[in-house]
Image (cartoon, rainbow, N blue to C red; front, side, top):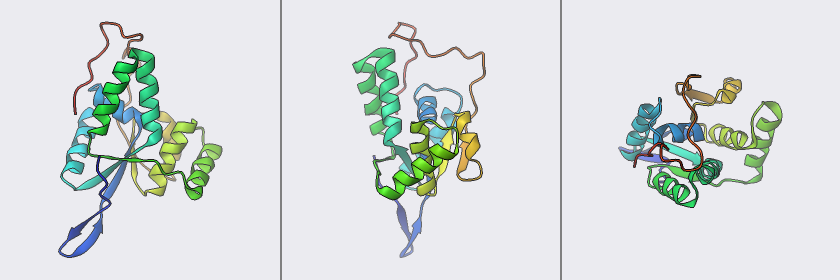
Length: 172
């Protein structure tokens, strides 16, 4: 994981454009769903130092929770290791102004607690939120959003309980 927040251009520091990946965007990338190409392109640009990609600690929690439920500890460890190898910065910010922002978003919009934390990171970091979650559409006036294509209703859900037909997650 990286921590670039600015780059030097001819002796001047220039703020890098920032993006926050929602859990749905990371899952799209890992499972090679529709939208994975857009996330891959962002990560490649981040690797070259052209922009900064942020991830909320809540995304790590959601990924681990989902993986534990679907395939157990081994799958969870595998997914977290792949995410930690990506060119992004995980934010563990929890200072009072940030907590206030998350609470304000949660109280004002129909968001889960995790989505409020992720949205608060995008808002406080002045970042564009990359997502596949229709819940974020309520935030179009307060946060820059870049939705990835939503899953169509005919897309089957991910298999449960580590069945043999579980999709393979690709390495970063």
